Image (cartoon, rainbow, N blue to C red; front, side, top):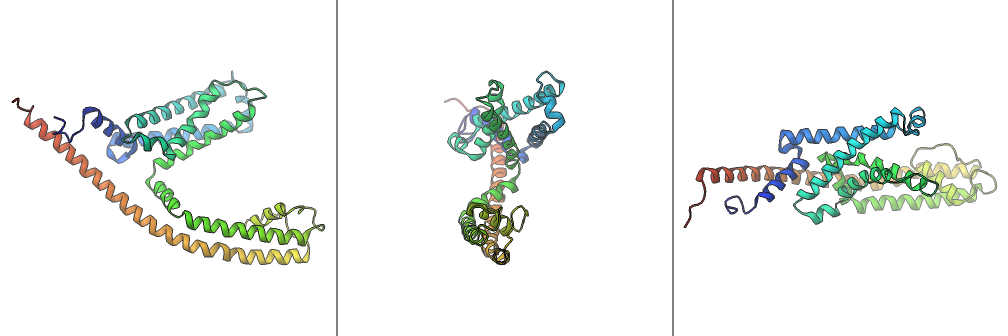
Length: 292
């Protein structure tokens, strides 16, 4: 009987359908609803994280017996419960458990729900307050769950991974320029500018200037310092433009290739579903196998 159904048992067929339901919103209307429900819970969770840091709400949430704390805690509990169920279901039905466990998105999903359970069973004290602050900050990782629900974002992540060498070239050139121009400015302003007391502080000025942000908290005051600043502004455009042309070209090629591959895989999955349904229908029409 298993041969007639493609050599897969009931659990394999069931887990495969659940896996597609959880990971492919286009597999059915129910899967689309589930995907949108996941997005809604993510937005609710992130909104709660933002709201509880507002000055007026923060003072109210500090009191665990207040209504505001109970509302935010209840919403967070519902969201974490949904995320936990989704993670466990995908883990149990994953076709390749090893790949699932070492996947970056799996660990991001796990780290997104971990703070809730740690904070739930940990009492705040002077020894644990810093650790708890870090765990509360880790809840912002839930926003990365949106990447799994968008094929375009997944494509961009894949392209960034393929463009690692070009991105490293950009970072290398940028860091070299920051150190060189920061050192020049330090020796030009040393003893004449109280805001620049080290090469590291001058490097911060170089970072803000080369990125064309220019916060204005640190700036040159001497003539030679202003000359160096002018040179930095001019050369920063070149330092950023030259590697970016290579990165954009690689990005475009990889994006098109990956998009074509994704479309092909999507078509293969649809054909596989049709073949499987056909095998099931044939099995039902032929009835049980004859006994020898």
